Image (tube, rainbow, N blue to C red; front, top):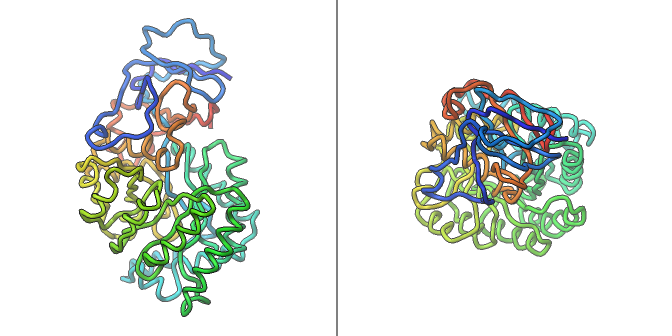
Length: 411
């Protein structure tokens, strides 16, 4: 299958040589080619350039993109796509004044999702997740990280991994599985958390590693969940099984999780609604990507990640949805790009960089995804007619996506 897209108003994130990460001041630059073409064979970007140079190509399909913008599909580096049902009752509780922590302390939150997931079959979990994923693809997401974490037992966590593996096999989207081994403390272990840590490190992680599905490990390092000491014990166990960290840190409190993540060569440290100078210093010089999740801040009415501090310090930044039933029940990356501009004070260029190439980096896939580069995968968004790419974040309540190409196929 070969596809030629012609008369592209603006072709975004164009690089003649491969790029895998964008940092600091460079995030303000988004390479744009006006009046362009793009040529795809099978699942790969083969050629692109100005329309005046478009000759000698003989595609099976030609698409006229007059007035439209083409850019890499969104790379959502933090999601909890596999879950059962929803938590709408807690939504009403928060409207009535209860905080996320208060709901969790009453046995709600993650514990509610775990109870339902444990009773839900693999087939049902798979169907629910695939329906969600198809919706996300239509909105422009071509690559997504999917975590476990709503199992809270060895069997249920492994069940989630098997569901994620099946999604990865069946979907054209690029799926990065992550074992969220420590998401919350089950009721049965409330008075003996050390035994639960032991279950995670001595049973869950070794059993999950045998499946060879996930290559990343996550921990919710937060007051009331897992301390710095707990987190380090879990990361040590993960390291023994070649699981690289991608961890939840600084959502409500600063415990030192950022520095700990960097110490264990975390691919990303995610949330960062709370941040201090020590955290920024810890990330500098590392290979760890800070990830902001503005959808969570919006839904829970908590502070937004101080993204300007990170970028102005010369660091990279990725943005992601945190799609989950409790604190961010939307996987719409178009909204996240807009929220990054409105609430995180990113420029449109910075936000698009954060949602494409840096999002891909935070998933460990930026060598093949996240930019328009010869030899990279053809995961693309074709917008509706727009005057300029800045309209993507500007029109925050509108879907700018007309069609998507995932692995060289229209969806």
